[in-house]
Image (cartoon, rainbow, N blue to C red; front, side, top):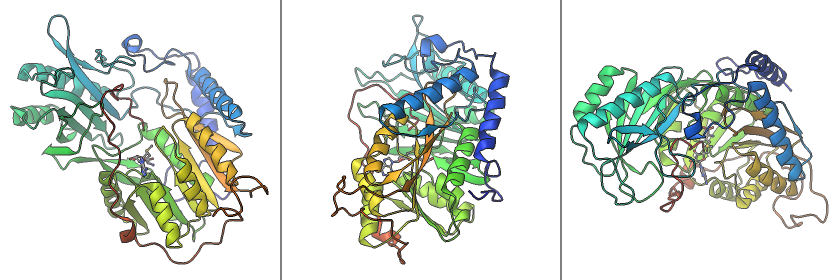
Length: 468
Ligand SMILES: C[S@@+](CC[C@H](N)C(=O)[O-])C[C@H]1O[C@@H](n2cnc3c(N)ncnc32)[C@H](O)[C@@H]1O
């Protein structure tokens, strides 16, 4: 594997071995120091908080190994790439509000599997700054006498507050989620907030009148700033708006992307398709190692962010399309487009049979699969295998220290399909991957898909647990 050291990129001079070496040393230091959090018992989100880091690493590696074994996948699971910062790492926090028995307003996350807000002030996974801003907002909300939204009666104004933090620049975004446009005194609210916390660069009011557990809806009013904040990631400036996905743990994300780049081992002429691309982060970090990157994402705002991010970094060989990833690949095939590498980083539910068939149908040389749930990844890897795409090694990256979640990455390459095995001879993907075909589908040809994610009402609300 060639060295992926490219100026301005992240962690790329480190080999995978070095990455795991750093992880080992960090773990050794933390071996005897399990973390403490005052609200751990109430919240239940960090089920491994009292487990020393070295043990967490072992547990997570074993967990991934078991999942892969149970799926009959013969793969090696590497040691977990652990985090140096295992507390205060969450760059996104969503809290709800409630009143205690003395009618005093408090804020926090929902108790596990319920809609009951528990006071999680001081949560150890939140950066100190975000905890301070939440406390300030909670006090201000009490002073403004805002009526809290009641999901049973549909009355009240204030539903949630969402905070996002750009770790490297220190910028903070505050989103006030309200049931209607009315928010009396919001000017004073915003003035007081930005005076107290100059790190707050934008304040947004998101209007959510629906009976739904989804926190953000489409309508927003920017009350302060330009509606986005900017971070530095892998040597790039990355800006994002409220609804766009951005990885929760900045430093681990840099390791994850560095690992992805190293595994892909791109050649200068390679064309890369980055599906489920969010604000373009993975594709943009790959752009200097290949001839072109195409990113596909269903969230139109995230696509706008991705285009903005390419421009602000002077990256000219990346384009982004607002579309369902599967639909895009089916269209791309009609246009005889080809990609040397396809990256997929789907939500926790994993990808679909249709996606897998469409991706393999494009006959890429390599497929890089990043997942935040090894269970759904294992399920999908079994399906990829039927199309001749196999992996030998799974690399777990601890994006969510102290919780039982783990991110996994693997590289799939085409190894052929055994005769008589699914898919049939007629299948589009049988045979070796073709050499890249000249010509490319035009971006304009793929537009027009509507974002499809509109979950129904009810269900467990997604307060601060929206990793995907
Ligand atoms: C786990 S995030 C990954 C984002 C990005 N790769 C990153 O690392 O920041 C998954 C992304 O897939 C997008 N998404 C979900 N379903 C999609 C679909 N059918 N087609 C395209 N994008 C989709 C989501 O909006 C979200 O931005």
